[in-house]
Length: 229
Ligand code: CA
Image 1: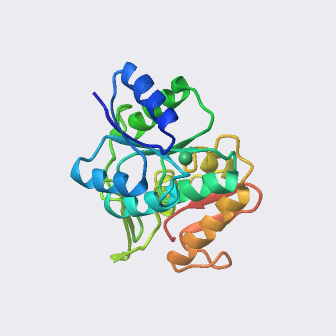
Image 2: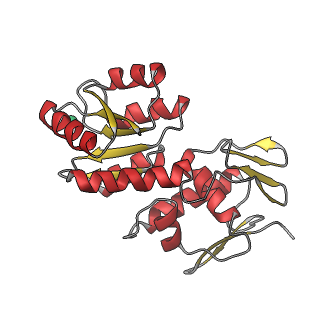
Image 3: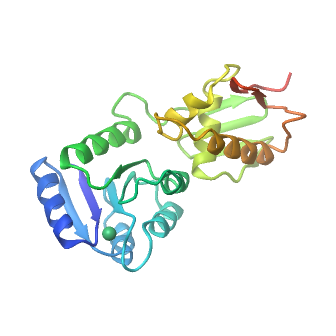
């Protein structure tokens, strides 16, 4: 049985989701505020959190940020707005997936299962062993990356980006591919987001686009991570 924490302030939606997710075999605890969610998270960590972004005491975004400081629990965000910027913002601070309201319970259930498969390693993809590329060492189990033994201070999304590229070292990876697999936005259309994150990552690796060491941009085609020759 999967222990779900449902954070939703609308009592009707909360009741309906507790019932429908319960019928699908999950153990669901529902709370209506960010503060309750955070305190419950610490006392009784769930297997997955479904988090409404519009909460009365703090934004779901803030809840997620605080949560990510202490926990890697999978989070599916529920947003009322079909707003790409907001979705990117929450994916950037570490949401695993999202659903846009109004959504049916079957749709939410499918997202929950997909996230659990990815994060709990149900598809045989355990966190995996560290990837070493030149002076880079990327440890997915600890979600830590080091360059020449110095710890890199990466956001969750930057870490995922670096790890994804490192597991495809020397291959050209398209932005579309990154949007699909790192951002989980298969419909794409946000190349700028990828560009911005690549430039942040590049800066943290201590290099520039003009003089790349690890991160090579191929104009119009994509990006390639490779050990310096
Ligand atoms: Ca709400």
